Image (cartoon, rainbow over all chains, first blue to last red; front, side):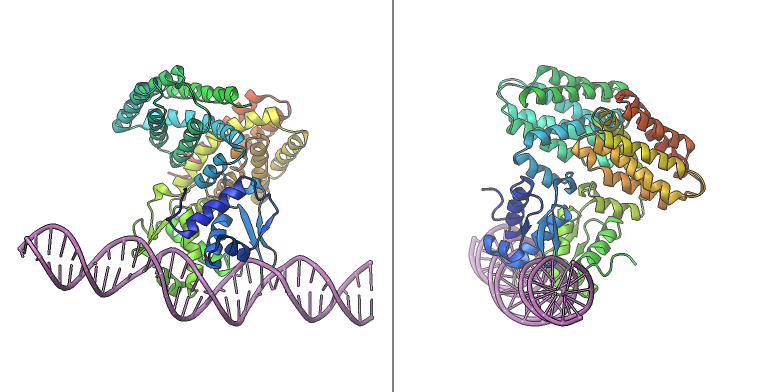
Length: 233
Length: 233
DNA sequence: CGAGAATAATAAGTACGACGTTTACGTCAC
DNA sequence: GTGACGTAAACGTCGTACTTATTATTCTCG
């Protein structure tokens, strides 16, 4: 159902990554390469490549004579979009969603402020377009369309900041927004206040007002955090 | 000299990663696995494992019948500490250092504010200890000692924030600080004002004053940014 | 002469078996 | 009890053979 015909490697990686980051294999537990090879019915070659990738994400550690041991969660590369996706699909999605939203609340106001200074005319245009798209899809259960515009909107802001580290957080934000829409039961339409704030943010960026952009983005973040508090304990 | 007896895999990965992220292999250029195997005089197995890791960092893309192509820098996982290290060792270290410092200036004030709320007594104690350590090593060319305390200080703040995403930025901050000390010519002792601010930040956290902690951390960040402007064009 | 289909060539993907190397762990002597 | 020592278990590396997807070429037919 997930990723099948795309290669054995991908399939094994996805399965193992999910199992580990969901806590199914607790830290300290050991996996043996040829056990895994038997379990997935693939050669040890494939398993070794997967283990090397998991090792590069600091999810596991491979030592001679002992095996592949799962590392404690505190060492994981939680900025790796793949790890984020695995964790959002796992058990403690709420906690994860909260961490990521707090991260957003720190980054995006600064990014918006920078965007108000550096955004190109093209970026301003897309921003406005996306904000209007959000308005258009904010009523009548068009959640998927709304999500698409929302993701694109925040991606443009991050890109327009001109800071590469911010720009690369676009994927993270996309995962968060998608996770919120898909996993959290969203029976209702988006908060109208949030929609308005996005429109105003597009304006602030277009008019080159960093302070306003920062302030409005903070409000958006507060709204997102509040939404989490309401919907999740 | 670098990483040698730690395994062929590590050596090849380090070399290739550095070459790619330093722009030596421009985006779009293709590498062939058995060419690489000949070049490094290792088996194709080792090369394949390395390629899989580089692929997971989005540095390269491997396609059948075409080879391993280097991806554009915009897709790289720039939050991977290994990638950060490679890029800081490469040509555009100044640009990279600036991006990372801006990132810090967004994250750390919020983290400090949270730390002032959540820090344990133990964390407060270590914070104070590290601040005193910075004072003690701030004069007389004890740059290495100062660096150690500085890294530990910021790591404690990030950990004490209670947010896992912030906590995991400790490695990034460590790389930035180490890069600043080692690569940038630091003939002089650290800025006394910065040292004082660290002491005051430790106090603010201990006294549970989020606003002060946030404000002081912002000042530290401004100082770091200013330092970059002075030392690098 | 051109468009599309059959075919060949290429490089990665996978498998398997062998051997090397490190290292935890048990054994034995003292 | 403590130390040296040997052993076996696991990963690390290698070479080779085979499979598969994809591109490039060639061939055929209109």
